[in-house]
Amino acid sequence: MGKSIMVQGTMSNVGKSLITAGLCRIFKQDGYRTAPFKSQNMALNSFITREGLEMGRAQVMQAEAAGVEPSVRMNPILLKPTNDTGSQVIVNGRVLGTMGAREYFAYKKKLIPDILRSYQELERENDVIVIEGAGSPAEINLKQDELVNMGMAKMANAPVLLAGDIDRGGVFAQLAGTLMLLTDEEKKYVKGMIINKFRGDKSILDPGVAMIEEITGIPVVGVTPYMQVDLEEEDSLTERFFRPGRKGPIQIAVIKLPRISNFTDFAVLESMEQISLVYVSSVSELGEPDMIILPGTKNTMADLKWLREKGLEPAILRAKQRGCMIFGICGGYQMLGELLSDPDQVEEGGTLRGMGLLPVETVFTKEKTRTRVTGTFGALTGALAGLSGMELEGYEIHMGSTRSAGEEGGKVAELSVQNQGENMETERRRKSDGCHLENVYGTYVHGIFDGEGIAPALVEILARKKGIVLESAETMDREQYKEKQYDLLADTLRRHLDMKKIYEILEEGITP
Image 1 (cartoon, helix red, strand yellow):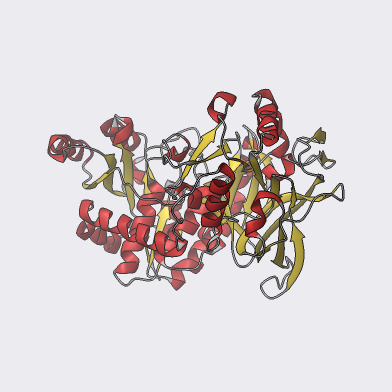
Image 2 (cartoon, rainbow, N blue to C red; image 1 turned 90 degrees about the vertical axis):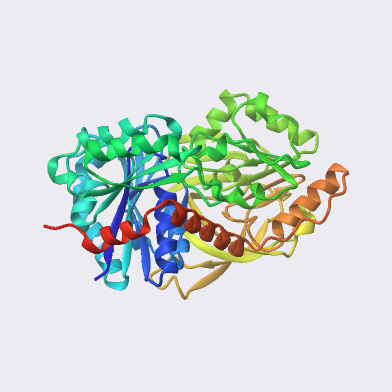
């Protein structure tokens, strides 16, 4: 049976996911079969496994760091918020239903067998399981039947490393306050503390480290720096929405919808020097970009209403008229159509006029499409004609279906799709996807820009349309690039964590 170690945090966005990924990489490098695990994840960025099952993106990233195939067992429960008080509940990769917060709080203990089954299967197959917590273990109003922080530590009998975020300030209060709110039984699981996101001269911090160790009786096993690694994130608190992008000559604006999902679709574009990609939520931020992308969303109808309230819809329509390329993915594609219908109240019920830029109509249904796809771009017209026939690979996650509402639009892609029956891993079918008309394009395929040569070809197309000449955009091997980032993450953590102490904590475990 594998040994486990758990990373918890004093609050959200302290860096738990990155530290977990880095430990997965270190253990892999040291020769151990390693897997990540998070019993319950709340995120709008998700992923479809080869079996057609849905899981959180952070555990996919951590599995890549560990050098193993992502498995839904690494994230048995995924919550995807649909509004401020409710979420779609996904268990073992399949939709269980949509629940309000109070309803789920009363129901969740029924999911403990699913959590234990997934964890124990991973435990039998691996040497080390690196478990990630969620939010804070000190949410005293939510500790009843808690199953993702100390509740999970108890189920796995896993020692805990507690991470705090010094970049936000008050890290010693974070650590001491969190421990103060734990019960004596819970405190015995905390075997080390990590001060994360440090910038500056560590010698100035050292007296504080000594004092917090004396106050808590728990060692600080590392002061880790603010890490400049380029890895996919899933958290809505991601800093990528607010940090300045590269200053490339090609301007791309992604509309930052309130329920934006799968913004990892744009990671490859963000990494290119020729592109300046920004996330915008107002007309004043939009400017006059060369391309506007409407991303995926967990609630298409609500976010389309928001788009109108913010005055962004007419701004996008004006941009289209001046020749700006408009590209919609998943929910963004649905918005670009003529009509959205929700007879089963999957989202908000009723009907809603779309933006009218593509001759398609969408009907929301209770059945969820979740599948991996491969294929090629179709015979595109307009500015993106140069992508025609290029190979692509990605996945679909959406509620409802979109059909043609006119004859003038063309298809964006021809796909080979996994059948979602019991034998989905072997059964495949062909289908057409998306729609394009003039300078407007829409698709259901997440990851559509990731294929070899696609992003550089897009840059060249936009540059030519803009009337400028760029040096050839380098074709980036995305997988090789990510491998280098995982190694950089592991190297950084090795320098700043006491790995000897962490291995001791892993070996000793928890004494009953």
